[in-house]
Image 1 (cartoon, rainbow, N blue to C red):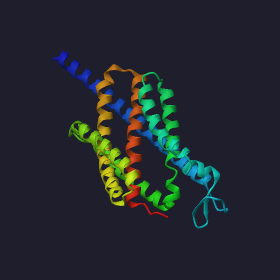
Image 2 (spheres, rainbow, N blue to C red):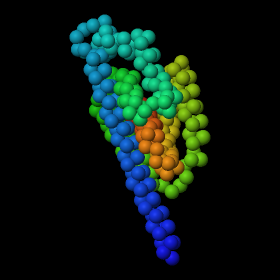
Image 3 (spheres, one colour):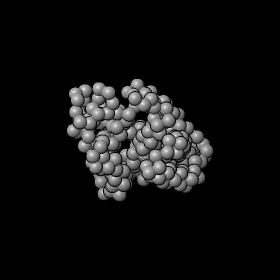
Length: 256
């Protein structure tokens, strides 16, 4: 009887340690993601401020506002393709190098990526009103928090959704590329609506996956690996949030 009690007590201690470690891990994930979002917002706002002037130049945007030479290079010259695809290249690079990087180096790379993403999406300040951007951001933040919380606490296994969601993302990317040439407003509306639903589901799925990954490896106690896993988890949720925000902005944003 004493032996059984000792075994059960030891199991309880290990469970408490894993629960405490999981909370710390998720705090690291959300904290890293939040810092990345702040960097992205600051970079986007800074780039938009440097790109527009009230003085008359050769690059008019709307009445009373004009692109500076820097703004023209960023948004209208061939450099825009570099700015547009650099974050995507950096995501693949981080995924490929994560095993060779230290946790500190991976975190720095993530913050650099967040700044590049801010530059890449800074065009939204030229198209949508600032109030509209803030409003949609807050709506996205509330929706993201609820969906992520659901993914964390639900007892339902969401892993079966993974293949379907990945197929949805690929199909969405193909549709977006096609619409670059078609320029169909109806197709853009459909893409945005599907994109919101897709990344909403991915938010819950990815949160549960981050939790499950930690629980599967918590017994090993490899702090370096867990640190890098938290950064990759932050990157995954960051991308879910950014994509959901951008699609919601296309649907509900007030264009100036």
